[in-house]
Length: 488
Image (cartoon, rainbow, N blue to C red; front, side):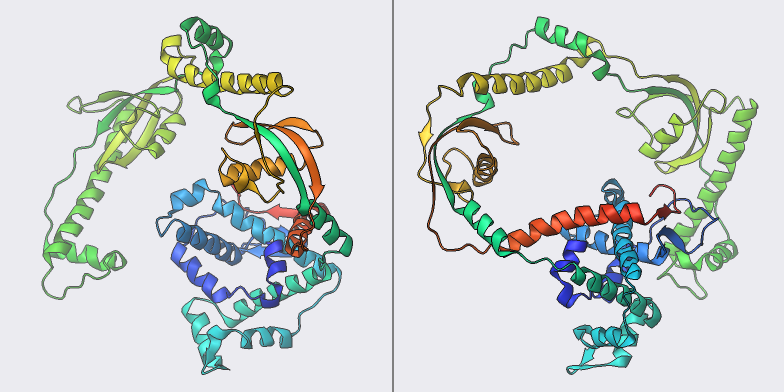
């Protein structure tokens, strides 16, 4: 966040009204349990700066909108949860709050005139090239923002910008000269590429069993759950027009777009009838649940049995999670609506995870054995051939010439050269992220007479990254962070 602000501080306003639209599109999110001993409207406090629930929702909305665009509109809340978007949203706000605390410690302030100047410069609030106060209010109102909230957020953004300008980062002449020198160092090398096709792994049962014996605890069966369950017989009653109308009037917000006066539309009749029957079925399921717990179940009720695990689950993942939290002392699960029916579940026995037999684990054992064997033998091959190999020669190449390494893709070449030019050995090897190994022997080295590279942006990025890490780490030690919501 800090580096973003530094790159864009001239045009700092992040167009909060657009962010708010994104926030509304993403929907509201539950943020866990509050510590009600703290201020109810705050989710966290950093130093003297409070982070409000509204700010958290707004930050979450911006990140959600970014991912949704990246996934072409197919991003959902389940994915957002798996990506940890809630924590990302809070961390962004914590970083901002740390900078605001720093600003406050220097008594930096933002005047009303500065806020007004930024608002008037925003194109979204203009009509015919001039600031339109009514349009400004209308846009904020449509997006559930008051002018007070918007201007408060804007004031914080400007304050952060002012603070970061105090930490202005510019490349020095020595840094420019040093980086230019690095970019213009050229090596002529002899190299050879090793890949896993050169390795043969013995996967006989004798080898695999010895490997498995040593690592049995890595190959476990899933825990499973022996359960009994009852599927509640659904209620299929018919209801009078009066009952249907009463239900509709009591739940109008659930029937947006369905309106009737004297006659009930068939579509509404079917929907409301099902809702009423589901409610009655749930009541019956609760009665069955109580009778099951008390041992007073009608003998006519059918009880089914199943052995469940993550890979063999006739219910849903959420229901299996609830089952996993049952115990011998509390083995009954209240009625759950699963696959369009209510079920009442009892845990009979938990079967803990246990090591798989060799035959059960063989496929997994083989995959791990082969992967580890190839890694080990590739490194051994590189070590044994580094002193004597003879491969291909290159012309003089610089760190930017990844596309010139025959046998490697441009990305692989860039990764290799990045490591090569950090190396202080004449002969050596580089292991790439895709497991290939490149042996190298530097034949010649020289400094090219190329014109000066534009290295300012590279230097600024390197220095900014260091600033981000060190400054924020220092501020975290200086200003205490309290989080009032569990799970964040």
